[in-house]
Image (cartoon, rainbow, N blue to C red; front, side, top):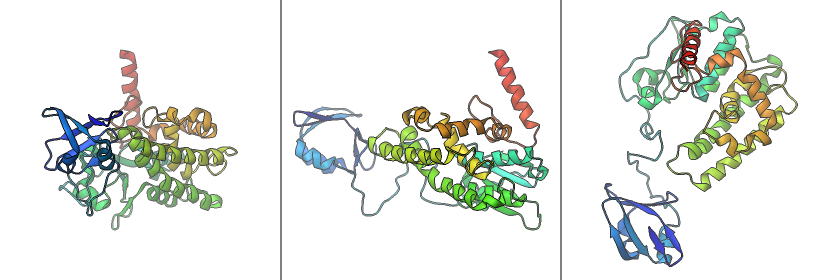
Length: 356
């Protein structure tokens, strides 16, 4: 607890276990070395292994804690970066272990996880099967990103970026095709199956919205979602900055859907399939806790809500959203190899309901 003059108190934590001791105050700003601050201490009231109470002059404290000052050259210090994904984040690429990927019976082999990006592909594949495209049948293998399975050598071979989803197409055995990035996979599958969910007359408009989603969603996930739901401490500046941007993006969608059933008119396309797992799940309250309430979605974006609820009722969406899912109480299918696998999910859910 640092007392600034007689009016202001700032709570700090001193990390005594680090090679480079640091001071953290309540805004999560970081001062690189406590030694640099020693000249400003006027009294030490209490000291223990975990905390200390320091009294500073207000002028000195204002200059020391005004902002984080980046070093001239950034160096990664492996450890707890303050969020749930810290253990798998690193500034390097490439395989970290030798591990081959499984291969099932179908030509299409998907390696993924039921995050919004993963759901895009499984929803499209399930919609294609529902439309009678039998060649779209697939094996879907779960990739546990929290265990770092995306850094296995087999996965890196088909996606050097180590991100889900990733697809292998073995339909031409002499020359199998790897496809990574969710938008690229949607486009590849649509073109492979004669323009399914990509109407020729509206191709450019569908592509407009597909690329809009690919460029916009990082602000929703890596921006707003990270600082609102995953960061160790909620901080006003990043939450306000990204809340404003997400409200703007939702308004873009709301305006587009005000006089249209789907994103490009009366046809359901890969534009809807790309956007729904992010923005549909979000407005339905399935992403980032109470974030939809925080952004006043119910009142401000009625057309997005209408569209999201309508798409959520599609059988292909209901199936696709649970593939490669191993958490939650709304259906799980970690690995999918056949349409009959969904029957097992329904039986499990019924059994759970019966017990309750």
